[in-house]
Length: 228
Image (cartoon, rainbow, N blue to C red; front, side, top):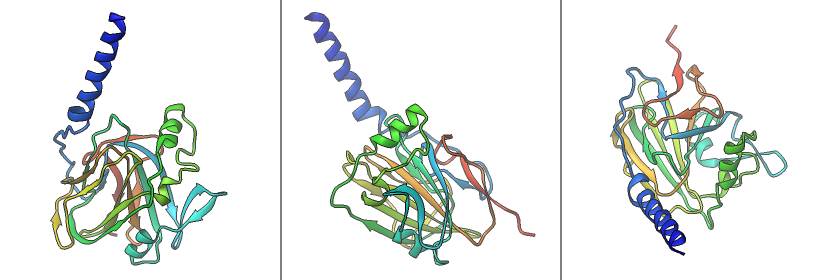
């Protein structure tokens, strides 16, 4: 009986430490110089998709492509580009950082009737089952907040996607604000995923791959090709 009480007490202590301290940690990050596209979140890359005009080819609902209007409308070029998804695990730092520096041109919040759980993608990562985001309906149904950052050479959209257990999405920038590359701009409380959409038009080299662990404000997702 005493052993059970001690075990329960230890579990409760560890949970409280995670809940009120570890989860909210916010370490300093030093971005490498240059204009490479940085990861907006800590976690694991779960997909790198080439986006067709107006649709993202995610394996959901009989492998049909799913339109994500907030991305296609914001790109300004018909929705073509590259979409990189980063899943944040319960052990990840959940502070989000700007992948490039520039001006916040748009911010779009999309509410949801009910947020779906991301347990499936976490399980797929743990067991190495690919594609990691297969049949994960949270990609198209959960609450989302998208900002568009216009830089000197490139414009990108960053989308925060809430998990079923998220209390709220925190975004501390507004349209017209200027943000530095790698600067903190928000977080997702108790969730979940951050996507980066890089519109076609400016030549880039994608440097990340599915399954790779990345760090917000430090890891390079894509490199802008030099002008010729």
